[in-house]
Every structure is written in C-alpha cells, then in structure tokens.
View 1 (cartoon, rainbow, N blue to C red):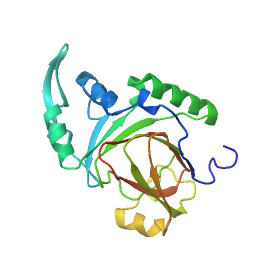
View 2: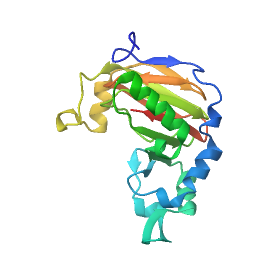
View 3: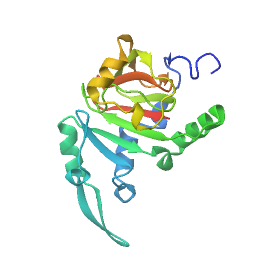
Length: 212
C-alpha cells in the first residue's frame, strides 16, 4: 500500500483463491432472480457505452405494497444476447463475502467504499476510456477481461463540470496505452484515482467487482 496507493497502478495475478465461493455465474444468476430488490438505481444495463432505458428491460411486478417496475428476466436476457452489460451497484448489500472484502478495504484505506459488479459479454465495452474520481480495486471472478492502462493521470479529479469531458476529449487526454492486462479469476488490479483506463470482456460471462 505504501508503495502504490495513490501513486501507481498495480496488477497482482492470482491474488485470491476460491473466488467462485464468493461470486460466480450461478451466484449472480440467483441474486438477479431476487427481483424485488432491484430498481433503476442499482440495476443498470449498458450497450456500446450507452445506458439502456430502465423501462426497456423492465416489467411491472405486483408485490406487497403495490406494483413496481423490476428488471424482467426475458427482457434482460434479450439485451444480453445483443452484447449488453449489467452493472449492479451496492452488490455488497446482498453478498456477505463481498461485504467482508469491502469492510477490510475500508479499514485498510480509512475511506468509505462503494462496490459495483460488472457483467460483460464478449468484446463489448460498457464504459469508454475514462478515469475515476476515487481509487479503484478490481477483483476478477469469472471469464476474462482485457484492461488498457493509459499514460496520463488527471491531477486530483473531483466530480465537477471542470473535470467532465466528452468521449473524444477523454481519448485525447488519455495519451498512449502503456500496459494491457488480462484479468482472470482471482486477479487483482488497483487503479489510482485519475488514471485513464478502459476494459472489454475477452470471454463471455465476465464478472468483475470494483471497490471504489
């Protein structure tokens, strides 16, 4: 941590063992099946860098307390077949193993941690080249994903209009690719705040969890 945190990205191959006990395609499928916990804030779908409208993959569900729009399994599957990606925010709230890792990182960094899961299909990107305004630890759980690390890092970026650029501007500001890393189950990638990067799945059913 003293050598890398806030200074330089770090790739650790096979950092974790038995990751399938925490998250796998089967575990993810079971979690997604709990339809009553999902809404437009924590269940997001992306296709070729664009967010899909929540209504386009949701259906009306009658539940105790009224009717709600929930992700519909057939509609979600249809979008997945087109190459869409799923982003689940706050996945640590429904998975004790992920919650444990989040707590450990919070203790280690003395910072609040937000946890997001990304499920991606082959050779498709959910997000364009970008940087994050927080430090990001990514653990890979299923399939493979290729990450590009760029030479430029923004200086102490914050969530403010001064730091928001369109796609073309971000590509120009990122500079050249200095490293390309293929993450596999059990691998860890740390990316400092402000470091430009992007990623795309190289095998279907890629699952990564980021701790920001």
